[in-house]
Length: 424
Image (tube, rainbow, N blue to C red; front, side, top):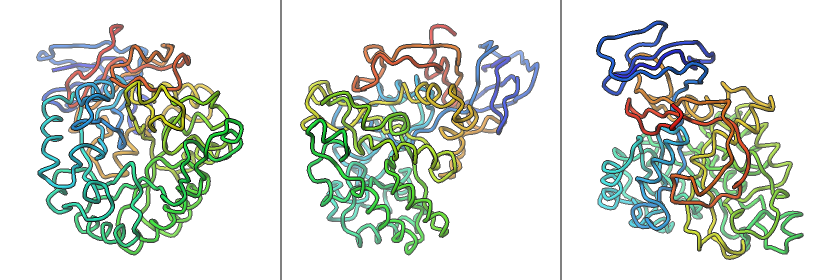
């Protein structure tokens, strides 16, 4: 039995000085001056923020199939260090989880090695190749949602039929939106900076045109449609109009798209290569406004570890993706909360309770009866982002050396310590 004492606990929309009693993986009581003779561990959290554990619906844990980039053991510990207590690993694996047989190796690895709750995706199409349907019905009881993340589903009828099946199974379709005919061999956003660097660009319409197609398909299919990592002002506009029309569409934005734009890229450096790419300043502003006004529902990291030899290259040759599990909260807190652009409560909800609400998950609250998924934050702690200190195997971040504030110091996942900083 664990007792958390004197923390500033986020209860709904406000912080209240409270104690939390935890036993058998769940929250037993929340209040002041709690005590119990059966308590075995007590943490005095005076001056610390206590919030529901973060939920990340978009991570790449690379196992099975690509353990040279990351393992589930490493990825889950990195997530816990970042304050995450639930994560949803994407299906671009080997084997691709397009059938229960191909999903089982991942489920077994999660059961053996993950220190946090992990809810995997099932693929939309066999091998994520966009030609044949995955085995939706046998996968449905074992997966969070269906996605071909890393690739856009190019065939409209295949997406439509998949949405209809998913709707019957009460599962969301989660889409990486990219029209292949418009990628044009690009490696960064098509704009002023790509021209300055002499690098091929990816136009914004590559993303937004597929979202526009899909929201209409989702309306026809009656499906919950969720858009991965929106990055353009046009995408925000399409989602906003779809929501006004009553279509069940939700979307996420990544920390890197909120804090950076393409003009921040200092040189041709593969560490800055991600998909979707950092867009223009106007796009970044539209993303911030979309998050604040509720058009964008949640924040997700798109944590994407790669081996050094895959990233220490020109952007034309490097792999797409950066890591984010361990730095997301601190970067967002430093950029937006410390500058007064958003409240701490808003940020925490976008990373926890709002995620749970968006996908009808029984997590994201600190209240009796809920799973003891809790993150403790030290907002006064400043630190430099140092990839060599990451728990993730991936070191691929363009933000090395940046000074940030706010550090998760204790993460409890289902009542068990998943991460504890040496200072607590």
